[in-house]
Image 1 (cartoon, rainbow, N blue to C red):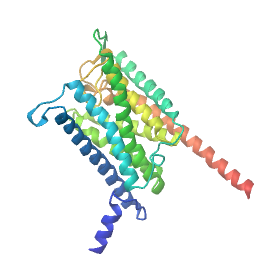
Image 2: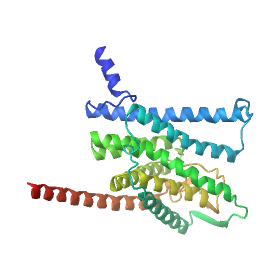
Image 3: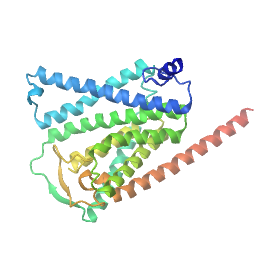
Image 4: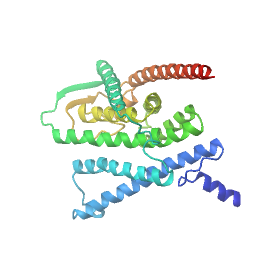
Length: 320
């Protein structure tokens, strides 16, 4: 009984213990991920419900804000969730924002933005050339305020997911276990929440979606390692989602209900070329683009790592 109590204390997400076997520490970090995620979501949902009541609406009776307002409340609520996670991180892990991956300078955010734009536009252009995406021009009545507001929303949403996966999970695991283990576990935890929006009635498309989630997670992880911070991963994540959803008007991870966008683009039918209802993130063409990018980043990271190791060895010999 005493051993069980000690085990529970060790793997509890509400302390910063690290002195345990690697497998137990991995379990602990996974529990930290879910505790922080669910804890922040519960508090965030509570605040949304409280806001309804404060504005004279009773969501229990179906009295809700408009679809656009709900969308904005949900996405801006991610900012509150980020604050809650940062508080949990400080209280239970006794760590600050630097240990979460927010290392200065933040300029690498724009490197991630550029990478996200290039990879997304190459993917969409290639799929459009096959005829699997139709371009129907620019919408005549664009809600520019909503489009602008969604940019802030996606900045918050991308940051939230990266804080959880590349911040909490990867930062904790790579110091105690190994970089490959940290990347793999963060990829699994990044993928699981996206499974609920997949169409498993089409196993080929669902399988490609999972592969692409792992590939983009690998890219986010490599960017984090390359820049030694999560700024670049946050930038790429946010701009990919924003351009795909609010500029091009295409499905985002299975979400086909577009609030407002600039261009009118639609998937033509359902195939492995366009990813069907899940969107281009389940396209085999996107797999090729992300796979190429991941390979190039991996080669770059390994080269820099080898160079750094050689420099460190030479410096050690010189000092000795």
